[in-house]
Image (cartoon, rainbow, N blue to C red; front, side, top):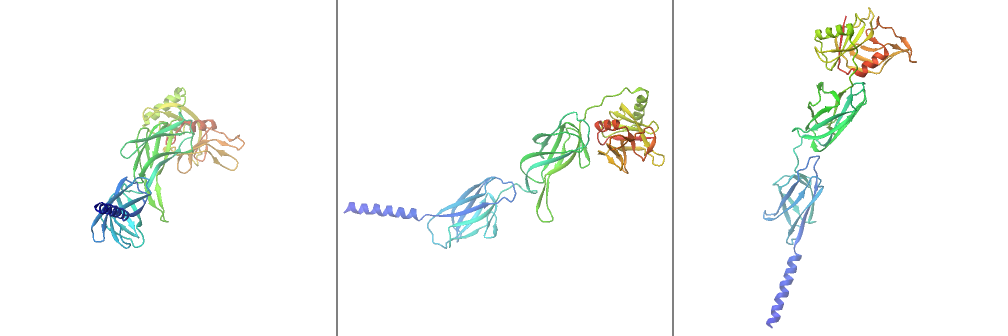
Length: 400
């Protein structure tokens, strides 16, 4: 009898254990992770579960990483009747949680009613880097090559640094001549538009200009990305920049200056005239000469001179200091053309070839005369030499 009673107790105990195990129920919160374009900070998101009366029941967590799109939080609870109400409170690791159209922050309690299900769907906004715009992953630079000369090297190289001056990458563009646009894209780990980068030209160029400022090799160019919303409400990223680049060109052979060259060199050095490049053009109207110099202010070295024609008495060539600001392949007319064209002043003033027919013959090849409408004409071979070697921004100094 005693043995039978003991066996009965063991059986009852086992049955109770089975019932206790079977009565455990799982409450699940399925989270859709939405970063809204932000850079996610990996974190463990934690949640407390309370009864409707505020009694704490459990604490659970899920991991949220950079690329997490969905996660789930599972609570093991004693069996409960359908319709039991619980309170879910996020405690850390997220920015907010959205449930049934309502947003809840850290410490806020959202109500879970088990009337229909023990599984709930919500949207979680993870922790993220404080935003200054939209998320981006690259920076692109467009370079307009400003001259048609023969480059000394085949490529121009650049370093990219972050806002703290930390080196990020090195890359290059090929140089093929004037009027050509080249692009260079640096792929960068996630960042917010609004971040600042520094582009540093290193070799292959005389200078790089951006927003009206000229930068020499090894000088840092500050570039700030941005974002805005267009008229349709669509977000736009400003992660690309347009710059001008003057390649490093081969140096010309230098003619024997002779008496004229020595006199011209002394004149420009005594005049104190400067140039934004290491070239200078002096047009002497009385000598009908276009003279080229290499060097710097007060230290100009005579390179060579070309015969020219200048403006007629009724349309004289202007005098003063100007800048070679635009290259054009040619200007076309009904029966002839001129070109290439080196524009140096508003109003159509330029250095260009003599008049050429479309079959390649001379329409008017006269030089050393006052015959133009104000431009400076040189022989076709002379203008081709000039555009090969003279970079944009070079000073054009014209005297009587």
